[in-house]
Image (tube, rainbow, N blue to C red; front, top):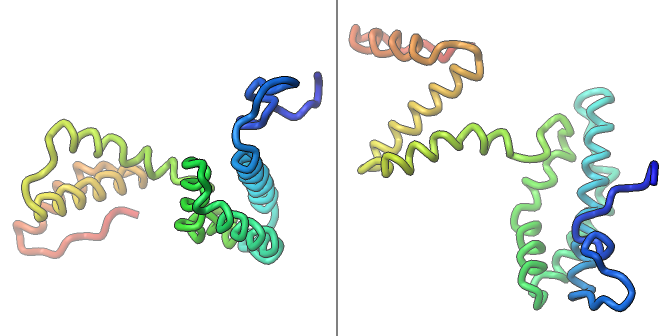
Length: 179
């Protein structure tokens, strides 16, 4: 059917529910559908705001809806359905981080990019079994940060590190990371 909205995961029709099929916990499903609707509307509002002038906060127009959703999360905290309870608690615990994008719509909606940037360092740590001291962990993290920063800024990390080591051996101060 052309122009029909896609099925929402978690919606009864997406789960094959129909006449005669027993659904799970209606309150939990209703909460899940509310979360999906809120997130979909948030996504659309942020995308629309990104097309307009920069620096416009969406918080004022979302204040009432967020307050209603916070109350809903409070009501669902302690729900007997474990995943429903966990989702409500997750929203309440990370409220400011989740909805920070409303204050600045140019910020990313997820932290996927940051997680992808860390992935290879996490794998390296698992392969090498980490470091043996807090000082080693600090040095590893610092080196990873310098390498990733140089790469993201289009500079060779190895050239920067070579210059940094040479300057420190000469008793000179380090140069700032390339812009």
